[in-house]
Length: 186
Image (cartoon, one colour):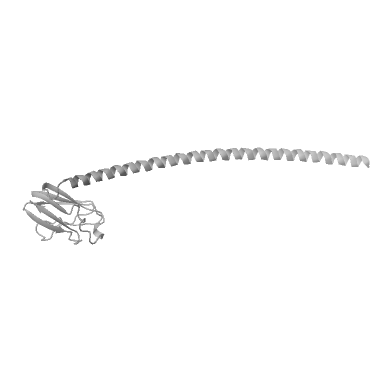
């Protein structure tokens, strides 16, 4: 019986050592896999951070480009307005351009400012051109209805009238009568 007991203990010890060895091996393998996964995660995080930085840099560059473009357009607009303002008030020219600003169809009243400028002076035989910058259609119609009438000027379009006889010609938009201006012919 001693022999059987000793044999059983020996087998038990052998099985226990095999299980322990196997467990150590599995644990070591799990640790390697976990370490490998952690390294891959770190690499992916670093790659993601690099891509995010690249996208942020690209966005900042595009924002700067848009800001520069807007500043350039603002500068051109300011220069254009300064040029318009540089002509002395009431100075007669051969031709004049009047803009119909965006949004004036819904601004009641908007005078002055429905037409920009709202008063122009041209020499006899001079031409006045109205440019419609608004989204709505407009007209430039002399209040007497006889001197000139541009008819409908659609959004983005323009229309002109040539005036030969000296005088002062008040006008309005026949669709939006609060929009008023004056053409003086010398």
